[in-house]
Image 1 (tube, one colour):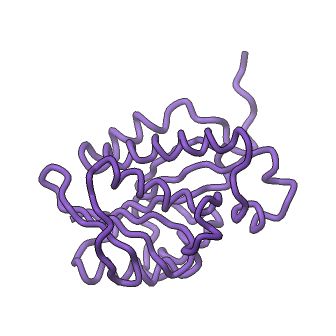
Image 2 (image 1 turned 120 degrees about the horizontal axis):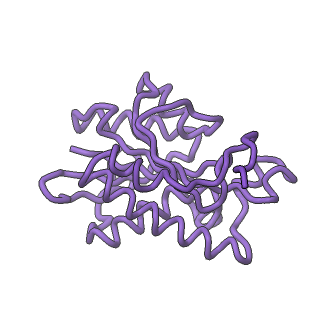
Length: 200
């Protein structure tokens, strides 16, 4: 079994904010995969089904971001799945808007949802798919205010494209594995903060 968890905050006031790209991406994945949001488990909205031979659970924790780990730990315990069977989908303020990056493990990078999950399940060794939200405005306002703000103007189209690309990446991870997804989706990424511009 694979468990795909999209991170975000419940409530209409957060629905189109930067911090909710995890929700938006797993919703797009379910739409494309024909999975219905018909369940509730471990304080999560859930959709269950199969992708090929793989049984999958897609979940949106309704615990708010900072307590996402409580819901994820519950899902793992009830399903008997391991941390490596997770795929956590979330926003990342250290990556440029539109960037998609998948990794088999890593630190939380200051993301409170990832931090909560690592604390609750006792390991950082779980796959995660991060969607960049960094723009020119990121450093001009407090990070908390930035991640809870809505996309504006041209950002909307870029965010929508990232959601579609992330949904495609989720499917590749589930059907073909992390290595192929990393090779396909981690290429041609914008530079990270502090990295020098490419030569030429």
